[in-house]
Length: 310
Image (tube, rainbow, N blue to C red; front, top):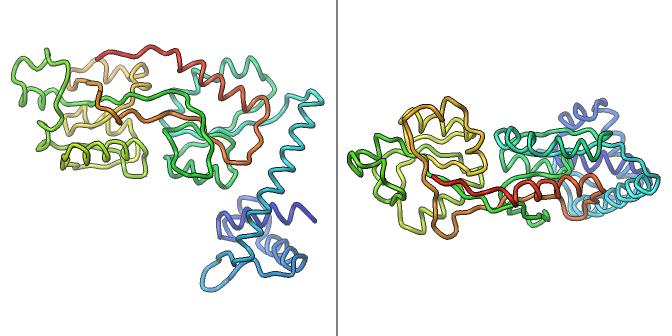
C-alpha cells in the first residue's frame, strides 16, 4: 500500500479541511483529493462524508486509527535504522507556550546542542489546547506544559510547579494596613471583592486555580482574561488585579517588574495547587536517542532547582 496515501489521509483527517491541508503540504487541492480518492478505491470503502462539511465515516475512523499505527511503525523502523547506522542527524519538534519557551529553551538548548550538534530544533508555540492538538496531529514530537488531560498522551514528570499569588500592594495595604510588608502568607478569601486578572480557561494553570476557588468556596471577581501570562503579570503590576504566576518564571522576571514597588508575591501553599510540569508525547510515538535526551535534560535541569522564597 502507498504510504503517501495514508500520510495524506491522516493529515486531512486531522484538519477536516482539504484547502488547509493542501497549503500545509504545498500541493494542489486536486492532487490531494486524488490521493484520498485512490486510497478509497484501493480499500473499497468511503472514508469521508463530504456534505455539508468534511467528516470521517465509521470506516474512515477505523482506517485513521490503523493508519496511525502503520505510520508510527514505519517511523520507528526508520529511526531505529538511523540509530544503528550511527546517524545523529535529524530534527526534534518541541511544543511550548510562548512564555515557557523563553524560560526553558535557554536552560536546555546549550546542553542538548552539546550532545546532538547535528540535530535541528523546531519550536512550535501556543497555549495548552493548541499544543495538545498539534501533538495529536503529529505536528510536534514532544510538548512541555503542565499536566495534559488527553488520555492518548504519555507524559513524564519534570517537576511540580508551585504557583504564586501576585497581589498589588495597594490591595494588600487595604486588607492588612500599613504593616502589609511584614505579611508572609495571605488568605486569598479576604480579597474576594478585589478584581482578578487571569489566564483564559484554555490554560491548564487556570484549571488548577478554578478548582482551588471551587474547593474553598470563593467566587473570584475575575475582571479580565487573557492568553498571555506576561500580560496578566503586567496588569497586576499596574494594580489592575490579582493574578497567579508560576515559580519557574520568577528567576526570569523582567527588570520592569523587579524594580517597581507595585506588587508582592506569595507562594500558594494549599494542597492541590501545584500543577505538574511534564514532557508529553503521543502514545505509540517512537522516541529515539535525541528525543529521550531532551526529556532527560529537562528532568536534570529542573529537578534540582532550588525553591524560591517570597
